[in-house]
Length: 359
Figure 1 (cartoon, one colour):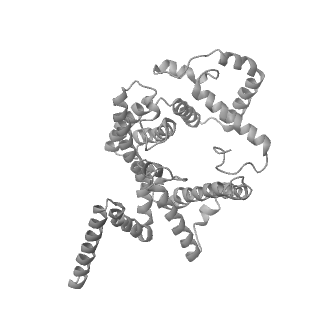
Figure 2 (cartoon, rainbow, N blue to C red):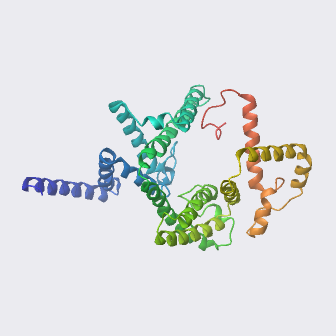
């Protein structure tokens, strides 16, 4: 397949790499060892972008913050996914400039138009932001997510089998994180709510984002189990993985994720029973009106609930409606109050995207 000259070049380059890498390792500098992986990623970026997207999806649950590697920096990002996403963004822009075309059906789709409006407003409010650098960084990070996980994903999903592949790549690496999390949890005892807040670190900031991702993928796993399109083997694997996810979401003590799953079930029932949107809208309007009419009585009733978060699942569920003493619920209410006060001060253009935590 290769001439003798080409083989000599391969051996020569390999030997040079080994010698240089050995020098860096001797100096306790290990970054040069990543060069082969970087070259492979660069190859896929230029010649097989779909495989690079699949790689990013697989690496997403396993990504860790930069601050874990280099604490003390003024900025942070998820490694290795966000640098890869930034590279995908640059390639996408370059490709558009060269080819000057993209799928018109996608560009004119209502969801795409909504995304363009959103990005346009983020750009405008970034220019008027109280912290322009923070807001521009927010806009750039939003762009690389939209490009990779919307525009390029729409082209990837033209092949239906790529949808399942995409989902399973995330699930497989997520199972690794679940195993890591449960293993850490065992050190504190499984029935330990305080430990549940941090045992998934450094892969997830806290139990809320971890629980959210568990909740988002559970309906998909249920779909794999009951959809006739998939084989018996896939159904059995999906059932086993679903059991793992159920165990993980219980141990996460993430009440919002539990409520989200109940909400998803309600939506599924509405769709399954083919209940008309008009009926749902009228019912929701009536319920909302009743809430405002009786809001004083409802708030008094809620304030009588003093059950805080607990390792007891029954008490933990009861604490969801505690708006008087539960620290987690009070924190969320405080954030809404902060947002309202910020809105009152700058109601039109706001403080700028990404500035809430600073302002």
